[in-house]
Length: 596
Image 1 (spheres, rainbow, N blue to C red):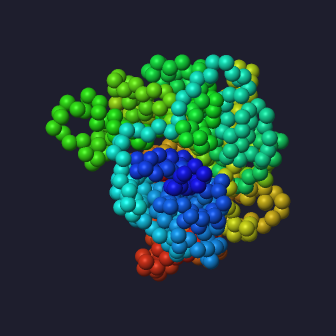
Image 2 (cartoon, helix red, strand yellow):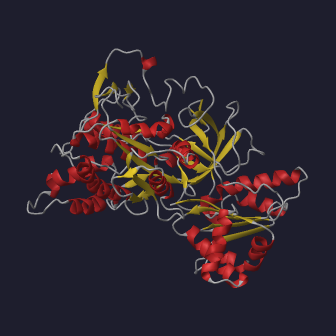
Image 3 (spheres, one colour):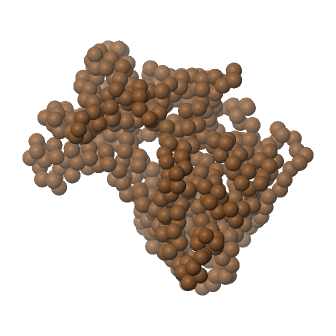
């Protein structure tokens, strides 16, 4: 930082890319105030050197920290989190800092990582120059960030005694260069990290070096209905990849080529041209270059666009009444209704605004790269050591504008046929470890609750409990609560589940068919029918509880059902029942793998 004259560093803890995107935007903002910023992955820096930032005049460390799982740090922030926990004697008294946290209120530990970093830095002597920002992805994370950012920079100016330069135009970080005569072996064509890593595969495989796993099975799970639920199997033979039941498999999808071609057509761009985006300040470019301007490179399906506010205020469609003040609140409301609520992608915006035709290099600079998608592994390595199973529902829906939007990853996976024109289909993937684990003692009972595709990790659990029984081990009760809409449509893995019950691997199988009768029936209704059995397993036999699926409704309803059972059969008040379940969580006996 000293050599390059930078005085603001924005660290990001990011699992899906949003935290990294916010960090990049904040680092660019610094130029407007006569400062120089940079975004940084804490995994790639020696965080023990953080105190040395005080050697740089007017220096500031910003932390954009997302929370993952059960209040955990993201993968790339794990070492930083460990360092904060272990170094009580660290003196950060010369460090100026602020934190913006990214989370989701539907989760139990809302913004836990951001809150911890904010509190811990203060404990170690650092000076907070602006209040902790809390972003809620269940509401409008972009709006939360923009509102915080609008108040943050004036506070920075006041603290350091600087003024904005008055340039509100979009600050460019890269300059485009076209390559007409270049060795194509030196061109990135979608690799995540190392050039040609997809041609020459070398372990170990991780987020920056994914393994190309051949697809050996891709079958539809549901018998009928409009939805498409699928089961895929990825071959990891020879990769040295190891996984445990409950882990997640991450896959790197590719955008639909038809949509990419449509984008090229709208912008009048030749997508076969090889380009590089070169960083203007000489820092290492975060966009692989040179690069074929192809479907791996252009990520346009996100709706979270920092520059849409400017588009909405300046386009003729919305300036029909000059007297309307284009204040931030007005633009946020317009952005919410016209972009988010209407689910407009970049293509839809360009189609509906013919006067808007940004240069391709500007678009590439503004758009984040496609991030990995995570799926709970639906198999056990004890039974399938060389295969990883995925259970997913294909995302496809109609928008308010009458268009059909398709989920990037699930539609890409759906089209991954076992053989495609004589070639094996492959999926770039890696494993993310999880805390969602079967009990160490096989004799402990387990209660699994997973409607819909939430059944995925439990297929692995059931396989593993069955394997343990085959090894002659004593295995405790294994209880399954599964839910779907219709028995004859989307009863996933029906044959496998019923066979597991028949052989005694599942000691109890409870299935809720929510729409096969007039009144809807969900998993929590079956739980209450079996409340005595559940209470006996949990309170007397040290059972472990596992919940997988929807965080917004199902997980909360199931948790409420446990409160009711503890109240009724444990003679507790609601407060005592809540504390009882929290203690189960603390002991690792109540685990959730949920999403919203």
